[in-house]
Image (cartoon, rainbow, N blue to C red; front, side, top):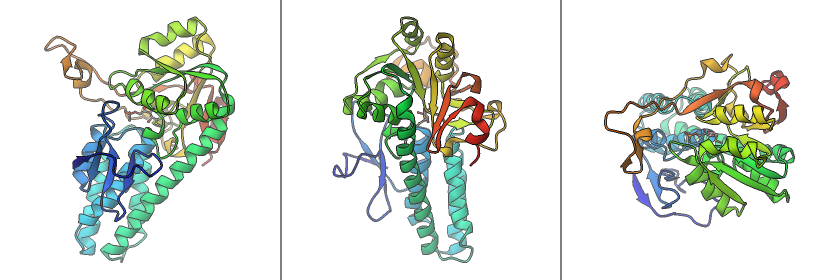
Length: 353
Ligand code: MRU
């Protein structure tokens, strides 16, 4: 894995793309934003897995696309003997499945890649490489289109005034313009006068670092707030709606999203403010009956103890670091997907995939 400046400034912005020969995944290192725009060059499976685990790429749809495209790049180093190629590819799928547990999009992409291998039982390595690449491209294209449709469906829902969002759900987190942030971009584009409040999103600061970076580039009026300020601003009438993304939605409509989302939803319910969830269908998990079954990633407490290089807690202080929480359907005003808007009493239609 090497670091380079942006290798292709002439392309439409995306935090990941394959080199022309398909052997290298270029990945914008989101850990370095906003201070530096550094691109990783990923050609090997382990570097890809570590980039996902360590949040160089993050956001449910982006993780899945980067995993699929990155695997297709890494497959150039797999053996040419077909059984050995297949064994290396299956081991790669297993390794990627162990990177981050909560966002179901990753597992959707991995099962598509496995199906692409299974569809060619007698194929040579060249054909298998092409099948993985086609699968990764198709997944990424679908996510790109889903973002556009989500933005179209969601934009009319946003009122003028203050709109709160949590974590980062824009181009950095997806293959397109984003989910929740895509809706905000589209509403702004349509002339809606919106002022975005971006929760800083402790502990990794996806809101302060990434959402602020995207909003500034799009010239949308915004302010970053500490996570504990949203309630006070709602009480003062400064927030008219909240919109967030999702990492996994269970069949009961419960939504796993970045830790702190549940708090926002509870505050919205108390203040009678609409709380919208924007996500592509790849974030729906029809196999999970309830939100209680969603696996919640527990990350290294180092993220709690340290702010940059500076330790914030006394040596030896215990800390917990669940990366996601689960918001029950009762707190969700509506789900916005590429197939339309679904109120919480339309979960059957939402899951009619
Ligand atoms: O830990 P992260 O940064 O991968 O968490 C991301 C989120 O929780 C996003 O809100 C979610 O993936 C939706 S991204 C369109």
